[in-house]
Image (cartoon, rainbow, N blue to C red):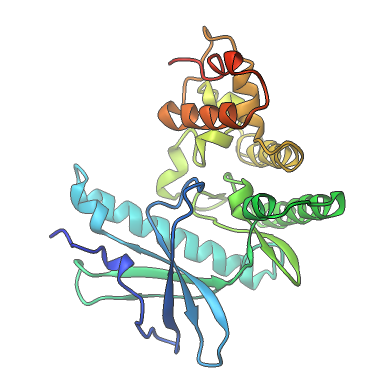
Length: 291
């Protein structure tokens, strides 16, 4: 597969998609963001003027993989898995999960093929709101937590565990409040997505402690739904301290007991915490245990 000067998924602006959607603007990646680096975001507009968010992926990165065919299969399976879960959530009227409006693909060959999903457009995510607002009142924080917990309960009722609840995956809508987004790392009864065997399916910087030490519980509910409950608790901590629970825990670990998983991403999360922490600079040297 030949390399492109510009990845196909980065070259959609101005394109007219099936269903009358027009791609009007590439959404720059937030430097504070974690995850989502294998996809591109766009603002798209319907024929009636309504706007939505498009998530696009292509196969350019697969060309550099040791086994390109296997990587292409994994990417395709992940896309199909997320699309099917989103359809299930929409058909089940899960109103605290971001709704997928459409899906499709463009391109005439593997070199320029782009798969996409179109979602309802949010006003931002929880992290962006906390960074941008000079003051967020207690009632707003509690509403976010209530709506996130409601979204998780809705997912769990359908046999779906999100596994990647974090501030950037809780989207805020001006009229209806918060909704859970991004089912790309979810687990679901009856499905076997490519990431199902990962010890830490979601962001290592938010992972529950037992997963960082390779303790994988054999019971599906205890492992998958328990992960979501830990991540919900981490959201409570984040909304009131500005930090996820896992970096706070790692900060207090002895250097002789570093997390066994996470590698550079975990150390980066710890350093981010150390930079923002109000503790003395001398203590920040012990925030990230060496591995």
